Image (tube, rainbow, N blue to C red; front, side):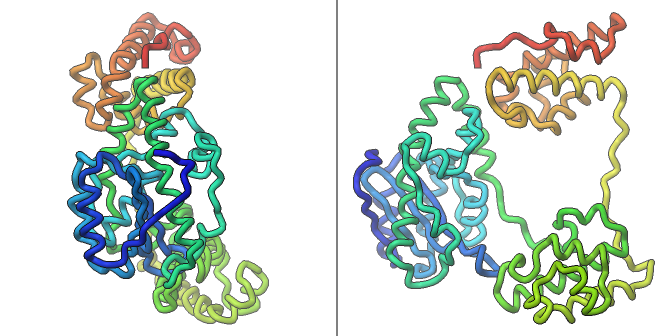
Length: 407
């Protein structure tokens, strides 16, 4: 695809146009996809635009004018047509949430960049590196749910998608050179299965960062504040952070102000917030303070099993191997193996590939690329330990780190 050609795009606003588009795209082997949503402006976010690009084709679908997007489902579900996204997690969840669209045949260019060792992986940074293109940022935080959209905003939306296909081609070529393409493809297959978080019953504080550090009384206050904010955001159709930010609620839960002058003294709310929400916040706090002790919430904590000394030693040894190997390969160690995966391996202590293959927490590419290295590292550690060597010394011995293999 020629990225230097002047941009042309079509806007799809009717069901008939959408069906014609699907008939055209179903013969394409690869399609670039991007979304624009309104999470900055509404309580319940929604997809406001879907941008799609293929060879000699750049279109924008307006889901706010086409209420039935079911015609897209077979296209996105077809694994023979590869769909290229950048940072697909949010988009995959949003497409399923709003339209029950499932994505098969995913290729995530941001994930590909990470497996190539890139640290700056935003689309802006990546396009600037590979195509010397600077994307406009001024429309990123605009309200995409407004209609009609200005022409310049639509042009901005169409700009991102048209670079995804040539970007994917470059990244696939680099991944093939490093023999990491199938790693990314397996990771993309797993990523395509993510789904939006369902409306679970239970306290709101379970999804609030920092709640686990609070005592039961403060936790009760925080829950009351979260309930107030959620109800107010729903009534005003605003995102939660535009009512009161998380760090402010956490501060109020800890300090527990009782009077208006206490709110002023804390200086965490703006005068306008105090005017609109001050009394309601104080009421919520007081109601939580009046709860009897037996009704106070308790933050649920998983009881961590005791780690046997040998397991702890294997965990340290595997992390050392992982970090050294990742450094050689110039990628994030967490991509090679997560700490959680290392803990599982240390507990199961595999002695051969058959045992490695039974570890469900590992991906197939990890088993194939590093299974032998893991077995060799653990075997050396076991042999050294049996000779009476300390794990501390073993961690510092270079011979325990497998030599760099073809990757």
